[in-house]
Length: 486
Image (cartoon, rainbow, N blue to C red; front, side):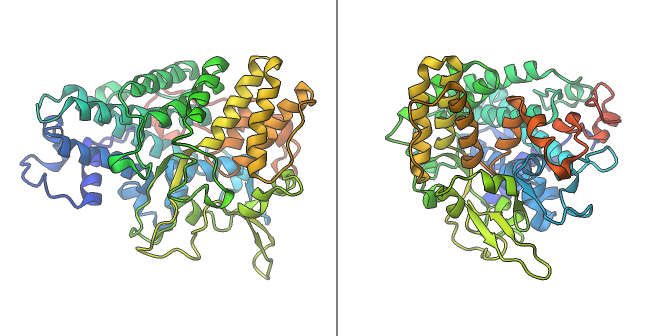
């Protein structure tokens, strides 16, 4: 197998699904397992569903390399905790009070990433591209399949979900690394020497994928998606709302967020203690972890890996008096001889200390939820014009009311409302999918905020982008390294 970021094979999707489902339907295939053909995988809806299940399985459970990391799955897999942990330490959310050079995530926390001490960024890069490759394999499989037993309805479903997964991977890659190779094929001849694409080009591909996916997918949570563990049209719309906010198309960001919020028959803000439960109506899309693999048991990979990750004093001080998110979503740690006092993130309640192998999963891993849509709609509304200020305040107050806080008055100035949006995003979305890190960067506040943190000195603004893994540049000399890394 060639050493390349896109060198995993279609068999990876197929076999991971086969292992998860325990299905025997494909045992009569005669070709070697490293050369399973598109026609074989997409002969029928049932066979295609195996490959589609594998797409999701990789996102939450990884492949052989990630599973062999034992309890580190949440660290090494971008879609199962890797983004939250790496970006949370890079921002002002997570740290270890000892700030020792041998601590995990020290280089992210202290702004010390180098090509010699590169931290966790290569794991994010590699797992995101593996997820993209898996999605590309399904996209190509659907488009080239000829079997009549592979129905048009299921073709649309597979294609829509795969396009959305590809868009998700590229969204995080472009935000964390900047210029990246844009692989839209599984053909090694097409991908082996790809150049670095500009963020604008990557974002346009993300939008194209999501807009196309929206036309293929159902609006319902039914069948095998009653637990909201498969992508449907509402996740795509929510992701488009986020992407359009990031690309400054505030009209469309508002439109898509408003569409999601308007479906009150499907979505509602939950009580703080049930937001992350498996039956939460705030969830738009979540991933269902395997409760029998390795040491994780019924814990989400992220929360298992979160043990020992402290929330920074600056984050804890950001909570207003009486903010119930501080008590519901954080856990105090009593200090001891070997354990500093502080607070852990506790949005998920099952962790490494109380997980049960094969135990009941009372919570899955939430990828997208309704509260973000209120905050996207508020910000997009404000950025379209101050005349929308009262509606913006209404959206912020919906979030604040749920947190037990008093409502903001309509008499706030434009700047106060803008500041309130940033504040609510910080205290609502903390320790979730790197929101804080991405927000600081896209709003131009990163240097102002992070350069004032003592343990991040001397502040190096170039570290707002992670370095392209050096091995990738050695294998593909058309890739460019981010400025500041040499």
